[in-house]
Length: 219
Image (cartoon, rainbow, N blue to C red; front, side):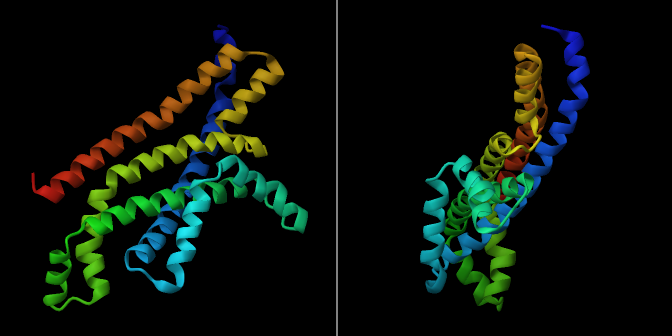
């Protein structure tokens, strides 16, 4: 193990880590928005859109992210739509993550008892107010573990985006292996920087789970 080389390579991995975090941030945010939208449609059975949402979920969850990103990056360029690698990565992560978030949030929405909903409506809340103040907070508490797991999953899936020349952590490791033949050093840095990203996120998610559990049960 060449520790001097590792020290010299650190700035490159720091830059790659920022790119990874940028990808993950937008992928998670957009997937949550898509997931909430789809979950509401499936839970309340909006006839005009429910079949479309179900089709999207099946397509997204049953095709690899790599294929989805290749379609965006290489396929769309054939018809004149050219997207850079970062944009393709964000869209691919949001497309994949949205389906997983939709199922997680839907499970939370359907777990809220009908008595809670009927009570909210009986005191004069509108359906939107009942959703905002009664249904969604409980659904979020229930689905927090699944949402957290999906966030970690999406952060790890950013490694796939290296296939379209986005300089995130995996891309940097492959570049060092290919250009400088420093396999051990590259893999060591790869593991270390993924731990730096994922370990604090995992701890935060566990903390959030405990907080929402206490809020739900009053413990």
